[in-house]
Amino acid sequence: MGAKQENGDPENILPPIEQELSHELDTKVKKYLRGEGANLEVLKDKKLKGQLSVREDLYGISAKAAAKAEKWLMPSKGGYLEAEGIEKTWRIKQDAINHEVDISSAKNQYDIVLPDFGPYTLDFTSSGRYMAAAGRKGHLAVVDMKNMSLIKEMQVRETVRDIVFLHNELFFAAAQKKYPYIYNRDGVELHCLKEHGAVTRLQFLKNHFLLVSINKFGQLRYQDVTMGEMISNFRTGLGRTDVMLVNPLNGVVALGHSGGTVSMWKPTSAVPLVKMLCHPGPITAMAFHPNGNLMATSGKEKKIKIWDLRKFEVLQIIPGHAKTLDFSQKGLLAAGTGSYVQILGDFSGSRIYSRYMGHSIVKGYQIGKVAFRPYEDVLGIGHSMGWSSILIPGSGEPNFDTWLANPFETSKQRREKEIHSLLDKLPPETIMLDPSKIGTVKSAKKKDKPTKKEKEAEMEAVVEAAKGTAIRKKTKGKNKPSKIAVKKKKIVETAKRPFLEKQMEEENVAKKKQKISEEISLPTALQRFARKKATA
Image (cartoon, rainbow, N blue to C red):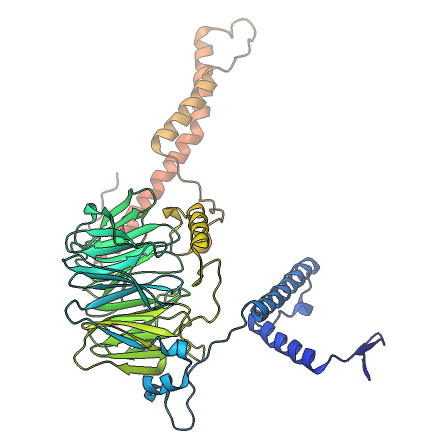
């Protein structure tokens, strides 16, 4: 049997397996297409019609290539909790999840109780394999999450406010009582950054190799960890803040202040790029979506707001308080306060978040930090009595790119990656709100008006050229020196006339504008009482 084509040639029917594969590929192609194609039959311009048809063909080819790459290079699929009947996903406990998952996933559920050193803050590497934990009372630890083995722990015997990994797991920075310190994985102190002062929060820009800190006096500092030089140092002027985060899309640093404003900074500008009033009271937590276009903020008035950073407008207001916020790789939002963690999800694609899961830790424990582990369905919770780990199905990216983040990389691969990242290091000037402008041509500005000195110089040049003009000799009696002087004077006056006329026009326009502004400055009812200038 065969199916007839338009040209009459028979086409063999594909086997059932290949039919299923082609149908699956078609559904994936629809996912990557940019909506419905444009109707080109309406266009009358043949040139434009040809250009648009070529562009539509390119869109189709790129969508097919992306669909094939997803099918063969990203075979794993992420799953979510699915409720049956009247069951609700947020009522499912961690014990029930533990009974259904495999042994390796069940190992990710644990509680580390260290009541003498808390509260704890956490940070994961970009691959999700290593975790750094810091207790407020001086306990620092680096843990291999794959083998669940402790690499190094130490006691610095002073207050530690924050901890962050640098470009890989070999180095990390800790914000201690007076200064931030940089350590290697073996716990050896490498640097003491005294210029930063008493730091409250730390962030690291991996693509730019910049360590960013905000101290208790509101000073924002950028330091290049490759060369060791201070790139910039700004006084924000908005007081002390404990909320700082980096937008993963463009590298812009956002600060949350006690006045309810969020300010966004880059190292090449002494003033904030954006200042937006997000809450009527102090901001307690902030998080950025992995795509960089969504931001979540929480305020003291017990409201969580989801912002669209492309329009700087509120998309959703969620009732509830959050001391810490974090987005997962798949877009789930974790909000922790007190001893309860709530996970919100957007499953419809409408950017409207609803309840997905919830988890209560031991009553009396105070949550200080929540952080999703990359490439795993795991949420790390740092609290006043240690740290915990719970399973959140659907939070992590199921497929990892070994060129970006490889959880199983060897020491040789790590060295190669470090060299490549140093070669591809971006300069601080590339940090901006819209990174798509990099590489574009700057639009030409309108010609600025010439200054008074430039006008005078131009007129003098024309006058000198007029004085040098040769005067034709005439018959006897007409070449007297007095007549030649009169002729030269007329030539100079003729050359000056356009400049003088233009100057008079500008003065008249300025007088008219001044008169209009004086009339506008008074209300309409009082303009008839305005003093009129005497005309000469």
